[in-house]
Amino acid sequence: MLIPLILSGGSGTRLWPVSRRNLPKQFLSLAGHGTLFQQTVARTRELPDVAAPIVVASEDHRFLAAEQLREAGIDGGAVVLEPLARNTAPAIALGALEALKHDPDALLLVLPADHLIGDTHGFVDAVQRALPAARQGWLATFGIRPDRAETGFGYIRRGAALDEGAFRVERFVEKPDLATAEGYLADGGYDWNSGMFLFRADRYLEELGMHAPAMLAAVRAAHAAAHADLDFVRVDKELFAKVPEDSIDYAVMEKTARAAVIPVSCSWSDIGSWSALWLAGERDAEGNLREGDTLAVDTRNSLLRSHDRHLIATVGVNDLIVVSTPDATLVAHRDAAQDVKKVVEQLKSANRSEHSFHRVVHRPWGSYDSLEAGERFQVKRIVVKPGASLSLQKHHHRAEHWIVVSGTAEVTCDDQVFLLGENQSTYIPLGSKHRLRNPGKVALELIEVQSGSYLGEDDIVRYDDVYGRA
Image (tube, rainbow, N blue to C red; front, side):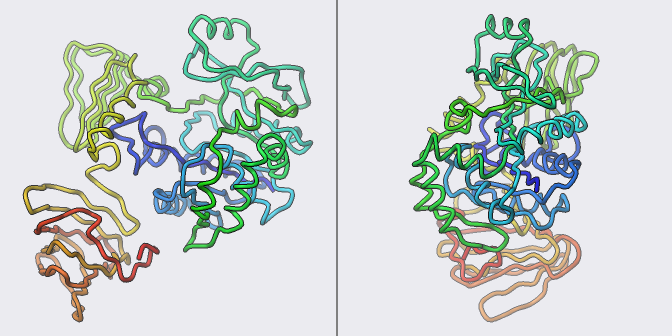
């Protein structure tokens, strides 16, 4: 059985301010139809005889992954939750162990959730060409045929030919300088290291046990202690903390004698920076990639992206990145796109929230938008999905006023349960147990005004929660 294993980690630093820790780039619509995560899932459905995917995701992103799988029409897949980030080698080991629970002969197609592939047919063809080698016990990786001298990727040197267009891996090469990258391009025997793999689950674990036995033993222990939580497989946090951190390249692929590479041309990009998105996108006659409300006068070779309702206008500039969200704006030279992570580092050092959260925060029940905040008050726009419910909760330091804008709200306040319609409101006193539910078939929208001595999201005591957070 061919099982896609989708790696959905990420810290949301390289495409800031759109991508953030709680909403990394794989869950964003950046190019094409749907999010990068959903596009990755959709590509796997083009393969013959393919099973539902296994997703390895951060615990913080569990509801995002589950919701986007649901929107993609996927039923029966598993979402394995990493309590801590330990890089790709342990994540793939978790996926392999989960796959072997269902099929002792499982083939794993390992795919990062945040890659962009413009040519699905080329991708499917490459997977088909890799299957014979994988079935024979090779650990196959996909090498992207380079079309430029690129210093931001690792490279793979092709060796002797195997069957079906596969080659032995002669060696892996770290990210080169420009002169070396130009030499690789001229040589013709080097491919970009894509981070996509195909191998038997048991063979991967066998190789991991040979080259990183302590890692395999720790992952096995953490997975064996995992438990089901709603639709998720929750890995034991204390045991997973003992897992050594390493990538699949360092832990396995650079050490095994059974590494194969399948060259592929499929319009691939890892969308590793704003300049990579500019390069992969459809640019206008002046070389600009524009999205949202933008106006470009005498502007060339720039990326302009507005994610809120105000206009971005540029005059007389070249090679810029200008990205606006409701709470932050980035202006950078396109050549400095890799340094955006330095902004995130400074935000962390200053204990600011903009590296982690958007103004609009998504929850399993809907979303909230922090419209205004001041001394002892905060105003939010809350949207609750049809049939969804917030937890039964209380606050020690704040009271709340709810005003229904549209839809119907079912309100629990201590021992009372009542309905509110459009233009009706209610007051939730400090310390009252309360719950908000949408009993209708359309979205519920309301304005919440909080007032009190402390308004942080950690002032929530949950008594009952359908999402397992109580």
